Length: 147
View 1 (cartoon, one colour):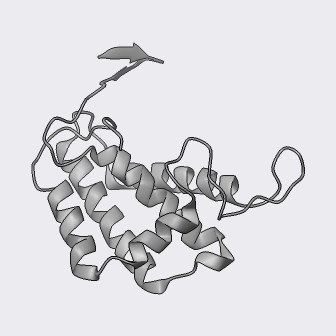
View 2: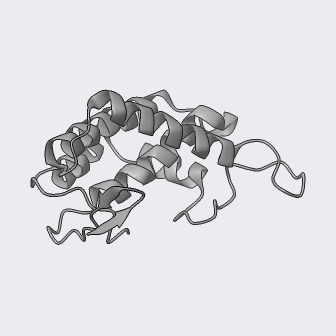
View 3: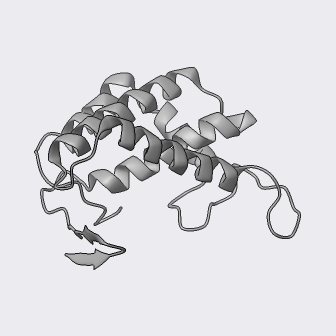
């Protein structure tokens, strides 16, 4: 636990074997931002699956967080995060060169285009089963270990 800016922050480490929900949510948010921002990454099926998964993760986070948070607060945070990710994916970089959704994004595991492509190669059932497994065990939402 750490007090920062008048709030208590709790650092958790997922030991469930099912994955760090906040980490996975961040990856899915990157995919959502790519689907919104990248012309060469459009995919309605993956969009639907990602939206369903993010909604389920939000409900899990609300149900298992120590800090009380409302769905409305969660949606505001999500929108701010998505705006930042979309900005990271589009427009010019600091040197004036146009960013590409096919390039690796700093501090991300892989390029957004490859991420969406990997999701597209997964069947609906397999995609949902992975989310089911992630959310199977009630626990504090953790960011680490992040893939």
